[in-house]
Length: 211
Image (cartoon, rainbow, N blue to C red; front, side, top):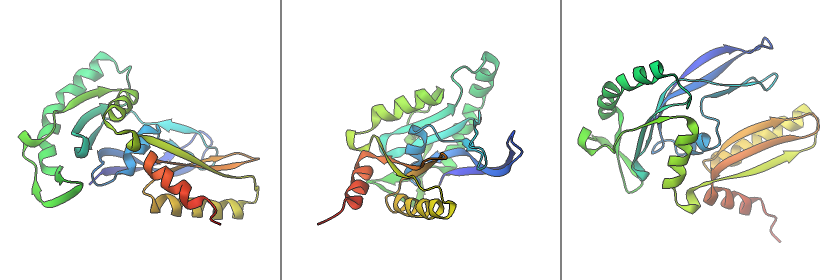
């Protein structure tokens, strides 16, 4: 299962809010996180008041057994040499610890009764930069599993109506195992839905009027 830590952050505008930072991303258990990464939103905190964004520079593990991907990721591609060396020194212990956390994933389903042995794990890749991780994921995905997105928008300025609109969008995204991002502008309120092209296509068909 994926693992995250919740921090309380203070935005330059003065607003305090809670934000989760992932240390371990297990796509077998949380498939929507694949598309959170591809949309550039993993470990990115957004102030609920002013919309200011800030990305953390914390390394994390990415595991996608269905595509035989296992990576230790430093989100900064411009990490200094000292940071890279320190990063690499941690790999041995991280790789060993994965044997205690990575569950066997067979034919699209996970089995909690059996743990993978170290020799059964995919080769551990070392990645600097979220862009490199996205390229690695996209190269492994089939066309239908690559990222798609859909914009649901309203021009209502009424906060209650926007809240109801967001609740509906969240419910739709949850049913389709997709993730969302909110773009809150004075003249337009947009909820972006991210998922595989297959999921987005199914969602679009659900939203198409029948008659």
